[in-house]
Length: 325
Image (cartoon, rainbow, N blue to C red; front, side, top):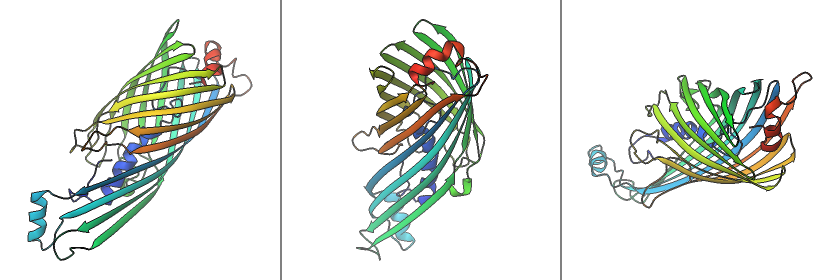
């Protein structure tokens, strides 16, 4: 994650950014554990309910060497020169509900609940506290911002399908605790899927209007690519994902780059169980905006009520084969 220790911004601000990045870790509507979505829809009258969980871990340490900050703290009778260590742990549980309005059009809602704990240790090298270490911690728990979105599959030709996915971010989280943006936001994605069974490829290009009260960047760009590889037809597949997203912190031009690998088991055509591992790419001497790593897990079920139709007609085969996504 981006660090605020040396800039003098406290744990509350860092926790706010942790919450903001949770939306990137747990995509309520992609084929979990993937971040990248596919073009598949549920079919008219069909439901999908997804339960997901993520654990995020992030560690960072640096020696405060900023001359300006050291001089300013000296004149204030203090000293910031020392070693700062930070550890963030975040647990997020979410539920996503999707309904097929018509065969090629879905509506979805995602509701995340989060628990974040941040710890900071500052070992002073100079000044009146030389040799002493001070510790600070902060915890936030609660409902985060809710997402509502539509997905429309508007083109299909042989192995190629195209879709668009507009969505809205509803400021339901407590912004004073850092659990929400405090403003309505919006986003849109263009989605491409190529199905060359047993290999399926998904490409997402997106824009997020990140309106917020935390002085973050508001114009966020996203690009990601994912693969599904069926190891056992209709039962077991391996997934891989890589992506790029613009850093939300205005003070950093280091972008968020991630890699993800996982497995999905489908004991029945209407049930998926998944597990994934996400890693933020970090170059030498710099920190990724995202957490160091995340462990993802989820369970998805699909169903319809009497009169819902034959699983959406043309989408029946994809629902059974790909998990309805």
